[in-house]
Length: 241
Image 1: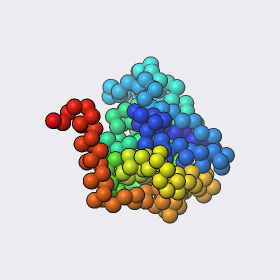
Image 2: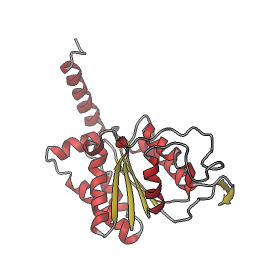
Image 3: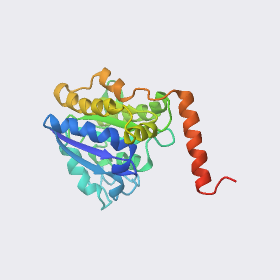
């Protein structure tokens, strides 16, 4: 089973996203999955120009000659796609959206009806699963809603099976608590368990996902603690009189 994973955070291996993504991928490896992890920041991917040469002039091939040429074969071979990302301004970061835009050559221009809805047929009909791993700085779970709606729509368009999402709210707090030795290791273990479950059962148990997302601090304490931190940071840089 080939797994292609993307860490879409600009902070890459030092990101809060990686704190959940990496153990999840480790769990997949423990069950025999072949995992390749790409850091989106290290890839040169130009934006789609929307002129559809990849559909008509050179079917399946984009006009850009950039790092997507290395990514396309990996996308075609993958059985599972994993996207790790922070939530930026109520959605995915721009480079992640550019990556999805550049997947246009994987489809054909024709229209087919799937579940009575217009879709483009895939150039390669291989069945794939899709998993989202997302980190959000805000406290509430509903901050993930716009991102979830977006990626589920993308899965329908590409014909991928949406296999679940590991969501970590107040992710900055989690990162701090993990570094300082607070009792949050169960979240890391749940992320790893989710990877094992995906390979063994083809899906992730709801109980496991709930552990990944569990509350770490009350909303009131979250607001108070973060505002104190931001105040100290402003003073440190002389931005506060």
